[in-house]
Amino acid sequence: MKIAIIIPVYNEQAHLELMLNSVVGQTMKATQVIIVDDNSTDNTPSIIKKFVTQYSFIDTVTTQKSPKHSPGSKVVEAFYEGYQKCNPDTQLIGKFDADIILPAEYLEKMVAIFSSDTLVGIASGNLYIKKRDRWVFENISEKTKVRGPIKLYKKECFTDIGGLKKSIGWDTVDILLAAYHGWKTRTDPSLRVKHLKATGSKYTPEVKHKQGEAFYKMRYSKTLARIAALKLAILKRDPLFYVHCMRGYCISKKQKQSFMVTQQEGEFIRNLRWEAIKKKIL
Image: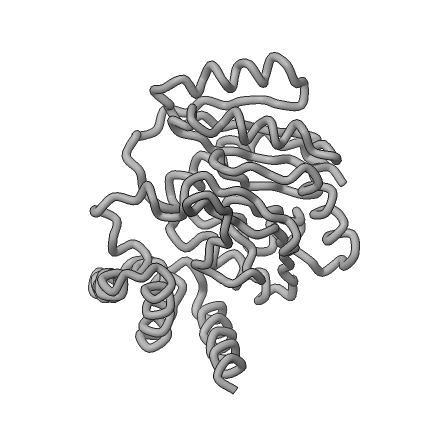
């Protein structure tokens, strides 16, 4: 399969070389690797130049966006800068973060998953973070959930879901929309990807309400939002997360912010979520 990997980066000098070494060291090479430098001010550009010079399948795009971090929208906007350079015959589209280290067989095993079932539309391994001297599963989600920093999309699925939404929650709503369109998602728990920065570690206090905004934009009911917020607060061991999340949901509702999904898609998503909750209870 022809694979295009897009890597949005901003001031990633501490991690980028490790990440790119894991990409070029794959047992099955990507057809294209497109690094999108989102106006970095550190040594990131020189690291990119080194790899672009050395490897013909690596290319780069430079953008001049605002340096202010905005969960979801900023990274997806950078992703699309790179997506424009994808070859038309690309079959798998990867959106990878710059702060990960892939096991050498990552792409080979991903291709095996997509090849084994034509209905698989999104796949990934699992993320592990370092705690003390051990790499442990990043348990903010189940091992069966495909994760945003290491996702691969079948091109047809990517088209069906309308690509990535420029909003926080893009890496949850894509899975839900894939199910809406009849696609399956798969993870390979044997693929342990090192996540060098824990999810949310770079979020600022100004964005503490964003997760609730995402729940609203996905047309969650208030009860569903409460359940989801409580689950995340427990996993994060942060009671205030629940408060901030629900405040964000209420603010978004009061402001009548635009939804990420249609009314019909929203109804499907709510039903799907309730079915998952019932299965866990029963």
